[in-house]
Every structure is written in structure tokens, then in C-alpha cells.
Image (tube, rainbow, N blue to C red; front, side):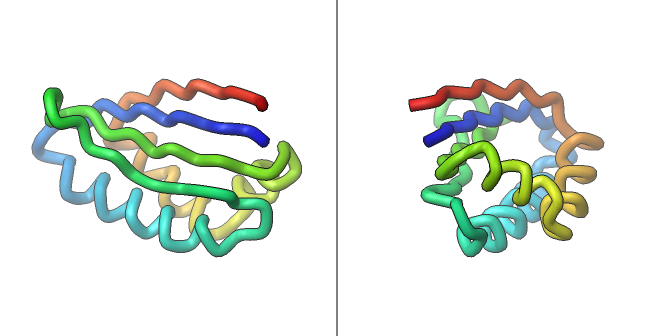
Length: 91
């Protein structure tokens, strides 16, 4: 399995549109083959920090996810309005 922790730093003015894109991406991602878990978390201590926590069966599932229409659409929004840091863990 592979876990991706996608940390996003977002300015308050862009928070609503970023959360909308992240929620849309989450709703479609959890239905994809190979997705074990996919969720969004908001920091209780730093309001400008969001986290998407993804768990995938294998790398093939991630590759297919990154080709999906929802990913392509929403990742463009997330990249435009956030600074992203990704942590990857295999177990």
C-alpha cells in the first residue's frame, strides 16, 4: 500500500475555492479502483493548512488516478492557489 500526505498552504482569500476543488476530487477519488482511503483534513492550529490523506493499493492505482478527469481538473485549481508538499510512504 502507498500513503500520500498532500499538505497544502492556502491564503484565506482562496480557501473556499480550494476546499471545493479538494472535496470534488475526494468524492470522485474514493470511487476509483485501488483507492483504499481518501480524505481532507483542516488544521486546528493553522487555518491556512489543509491536508489530503490518500491511501492506494499500489502505484498503478495512483497512475490511473492521476489520469482521471477529476484529478486533472481539480489538481490545476489546487496547484494554482496553494503551495503543495507531498510525503509518500510505502508499507
